[in-house]
Length: 195
Image 1 (cartoon, helix red, strand yellow):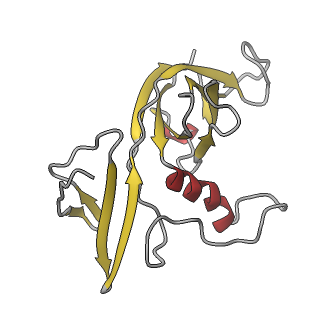
Image 2 (spheres, rainbow, N blue to C red):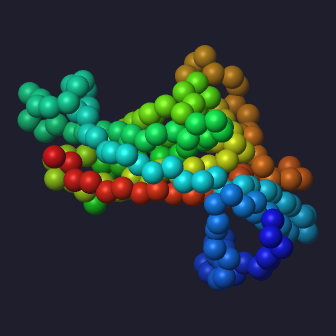
């Protein structure tokens, strides 16, 4: 929304990157593109980042923190943070680990502050981490259209319960019938070792 523009460069098939633009919190961004002769457009506003307060690890299947009788216990990661009061906030959690088999990269965790504005929040990401695994958590502050896309994506791919609505395309912020989303987001990051 400041008038800066750049034609993105295709760095590998289907991947386009900026060479000069740097995302700035509080600004709006527009993506324009043409595919098979059809023009598309999408807008996104980059929210302010929210810092992660702490990462905790909880036993899978055992409930609670601490020891387990399972000889090979695994853990899930819990990200705690304080929601910014007075504005609608939307979050997405991304987790990576040195133990790649312990983290399902298709597991998307999104959360809205609609019912808990300004309070301490936590997002649990199901993992199968073991003791001494290292983990990095990224807390992405996303806009509502990105949240809407990911909130409706499980219905589109048939991953919700039997009480869910029939499969349909997720809500997209791309014009002209485009399917997908364009997102400008801010990130806070924290790493820890399972202990």
